[in-house]
Length: 179
Image 1: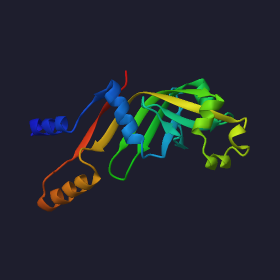
Image 2: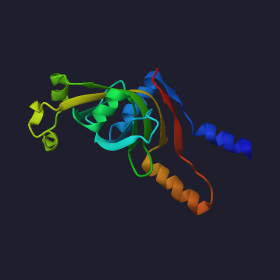
Image 3: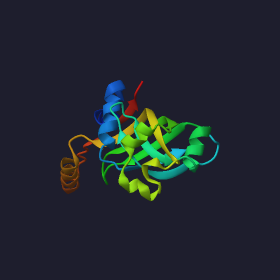
Image 4: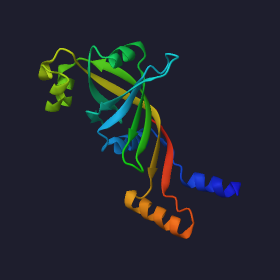
């Protein structure tokens, strides 16, 4: 029985490296508008976790956010740039956990590229609000859980498996290592 479970595990696992890892990170995050942004990972206390809107996922699998210069998040990053991002793309698939290195910039061109009018809710002076900073999270590694053939096929396999009493797993998971 152990060899059957091991074969099933190997069949449902695919670790990705380099450009393939970057592409998978970008693909899985493309429909995610938000993530949980975790800071303070090495402070010897529970992490600080907050939901954040993703402004951009670039070709290298890095994430961009806008944040206030006086926020706890920015202070956390200044003290420890290691961050953890957690994504849930749908109810049944597209789960992504990414570790990375965060940097803060006040580059007006970057802020202009990431700006959306709804952000005036937090930055009341608009795009020229002096508190706006951009955060780039350079992803280093992560882990993903997904399905192989899309949600419709995965759901159908689940229903058929339940009806006939057989596992028809369509899941796939693996490590993501960029360098």
